[in-house]
Image 1: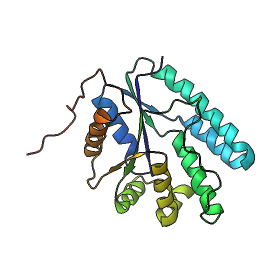
Image 2: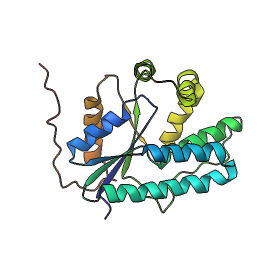
Image 3: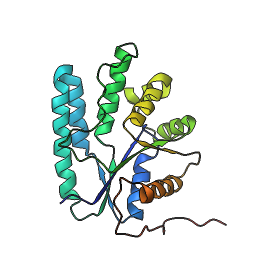
Length: 212
């Protein structure tokens, strides 16, 4: 049985998306569904080895398979936070198409395929770029080609944000550095948004630090 509410999160790498997802789920007694390492590798292989004209069908199937895993793993959860959604793929494809055609998009989907569960609400987390870069560097990991592009290519980064907006992602802009503030802002939107059915749980704010 599908959980009553799905909330999706999208963001540039290093924006605190996964930490914020855990905070939001904690507040509403829900679960976070993370894309598995195996699924990430499967998608990377499709992008790197499959001809462009055949990629869409193969990638679509990965989201169908992932959806089945999500439903089985969160069957008893009334509230599920998705750490990235189908929009991650669609936005990247749109931006690639825009850049490949001199900023004249030729393929601009605006909704999820009907056989995928559309989240009730999808957020886009936005933090100051210097802070995002600091977080990525603090990981101490070798930067991927995508990390490098996010760091160096302002146009690419801006187009990703614009395309997420076109898909209806609600911006969560943060000037502060903690995920608690972001989670609280998300909770405020969730509780008052017309696309989210009335929740049968009371938000739990016990994780918040009360500072004098």
